[in-house]
Each structure stands twice: as C-alpha cells, then as structure tokens.
Length: 307
Image (cartoon, rainbow, N blue to C red; front, side):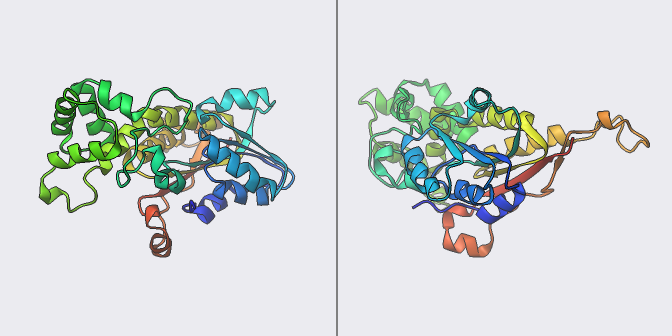
C-alpha cells in the first residue's frame, strides 16, 4: 500500500480551517486527503486523479470519514473549469503530491517499473491512447535523445536513443525488460553503481507520456490564481525538474520588484500577493526515510496568499 510522504508537514502547512474549501490536486490513495477531510468537518474537499483505480479506492476510504467531498477522475490541469462548474471561485488550500504512488509502481501490469517485466505502458490515465510503447517505437532519435537528456538528465541519452532506433528497426520494442536491456547495454559498468541504469530513462518516458511537467506548471499557476487570501499551497516534489518548477513559480509571484525593494512607504498594491513560507524546502526525517525509502528524494515547499 502507498505510504504518503511528509504527510504531517504538508497538512500542517495548509493550516486547515474546519469550514474551508480544499483541493487535493493529486489524490492517489487518499493519504493526504484523509487528513484534510478529518480536519475540514464543515467545509468541502475536492480531489483530482487520472487513475480510475485510485479514485474508486479513495472514495471508499473517504466515505468512512465524511461525505463532504467530491472526486474527479481527470487531470488537475482541468481544475479551474471543474471548480467553476461546481460554483467554486476561491479555495483555501491546495495539496500537490507529485510522482507515482507505490501502488502504480508495484503493479507490474502498468509498465512503470524497470524491475518487473510488463508491456510498455506508463499511462496514468488508462483511457489515453498514447503509451510508452508508442513513444519508444515512433519518436525520432533526436526527440528520444532530448527527452532522455531533459527529463531524465541521462548522461548517455544520445547513445541510448541511437540504440533504441537501431533495435526497433529489427523488432518493435514491446516490454519493460526489453527496454531495460537496451539501456543497460549503453551504460558503462562504473556508472551502474549509482542506482538502477534504467531509472532516469524510465522517469523521462513517464514524464513525456503523461505530460507531467506541462500539466504541473499549469495546475500550480491556476492554483495560485484561485487561492484565497490567507490560503496555502503545500507542494511535494520528487525530482529536481518538478522542484525547479515549483521553486521558480513560487519565487516569481512572491518577489518584490527590485525597483521598489527597500524603499520606504511603498504602495501596498505594488507589493507581492504571496509569501513563501518555506525559505528552504522541508525534507523527510531520517526516521521517515528508514520507514519509507521512497521518500528520500521528496521536497515540500509551502506558499501563502497574503492579499
């Protein structure tokens, strides 16, 4: 079962009011949503997830806590439109917990794991028609290289992309372990001692298949726009690409214009509408990492709307 990362820290960071409107932008298996609902007895919780299995499971979990929630089986990129249809214009808090759940990773049939032989899939939304198999077998060598370089920060991206194109010209690449073997053959032994050789490429493919970074940028920007005064956003990321997006967006809306910075009697309308709560990201404790090794790369950033 999935173990929610930085749960207490993220929930505390939302400063939940019992009559507020809250949104879990990445519902998963209701770890964070359950804690929000427990504290939000007179308000309402909206939640989003592309994975229909996660939505069904979480609905059963949340029903045991209260009835003041609604789950949407759609990407959080649609949040503004969905909430508008629900008559909601402002929200008191948003929770983002990015990346994969342990359930998705450990379910071999989903094709997310480089440890289990399965069809190349990696779709978070199983109704989508575009999968990892399509990407691996149709993208040009240049596009594969750029994805592996930019989304996986893979040192041997060019070599791996060339090898994939070579292999698929002989036979279509269909399974996770077929792809793992190709990647493994491109990486020198000395570089295999620092984690699984396929980790970065699998991350890159998953990000591209699900448009994770593009959707995150829009969803986080929309959340800031919809956030109420005195409302908070807690955002948990799991790799440097996500964290960089979060950090830069938070910075862009909270920085004082250099032209007026330090001046006395500045018109309040010229000051930022947001304030970063976490000057440095909150990291998992040693105890949490020992109990849940998958939490090791997590970072939590929190921002507040102040006007």
